[in-house]
Length: 523
Image 1 (cartoon, rainbow, N blue to C red):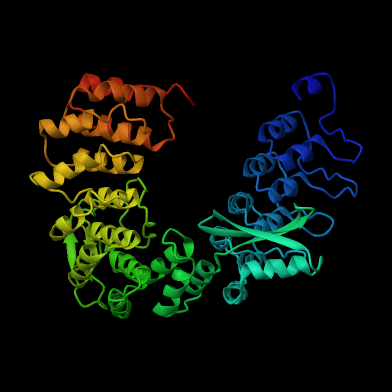
Image 2 (image 1 turned 30 degrees about the vertical axis):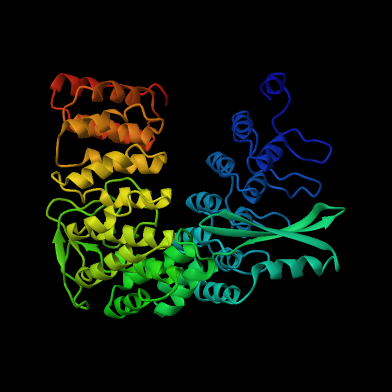
């Protein structure tokens, strides 16, 4: 491309089909070539194609090529320009469930209410598509038609998505052979149905299945109080605690934070269905958590606890509660003087401890351990530790998370468990157990050696946490790994942020200044 442009080929030349290089590169998601053509003078708004109605921005949006979309918008592409049939880039992005692309367009001024060719607002189309992330993006930017979108999401909750897609395809090719598959993405699953001709896919359609999460989002936005049982059934539709249907239901009940919700969750703890018990544990693990302020007057316990939560992503007042995996790093812990309010802790903890002791299903153990970790109550330490050797790595991961900030510096069994977990085959387990070791209020040769054993860990986050733990203890072995992470690591990575934080713990002023002045070698 560089050679052609230097040879004098116009950036806006067209091929035999009337298509420009910019349009073709946009459709293929070639961000580098798009930027090169724009720098050479290509018009980001030039329509092309056989009907002279194909826009580069729409071509990029239909494929979800967010980098291309941002490049075109930065070069002056008009966000709401329509193609011949009335499609805009946002229409394409919303219809295909490309949430990041939709977000980029909305950030650059695309109208969240500009109707699609069908006459429907984008929010209704996003609700039909079943993409919670796209719905969230539209809501953040003020999209209206929320009641209509809720009606559409609820309608799809009564339908079999796969069957609907198949019937739509067979309406055009009666009797054709079809195949279907599910793809995990965007906090849920996308159902893909294809028509086969001579054994090969010839046509197809797809749709996401996050209609439960979307209905919950919109009901909250509209102030509709959805019954606990309805929210729980939505969560259990896919049976996966890491999916949006589940997480949005827990979030809605967490925000509600009332006695009725507690009673419903407590009753589900006695269910003979481990998945229902896991949902109840998730609710009880989050219920009522806020920072600062007075305890919620609607609750019975009014329990307030000073200190910090078991992991760094405990729910802030007015913020989203953490997803089940809890792998969120950041400064979200309370400031000095803040209180974590746990209004249901006194009654929730016995239920959660009992689940932890009696659970046999790995998913239920994960939920119970995670909930106990959120409550960060020392009385539950042994109930968490009993699962430190669980054969399921996901359970050991939750144990490592729960132990962050929960193990006292003089608790020999807890420290031994963390040292063992820091050698775990799973990266996430090593990472969070090393984090817990780093933050222990203790300094022993065994803790230092366990941390030193991780400074060359293949997982950069684990190595950074080990270096931080050694820096806190003024151990000289922290220096080499901090230099490596600060100089050679990705400046945008969590590991680099952890290493930067570690430097502030070093009391040797000369060494601290040298490390603070270390410039990353990569941009």
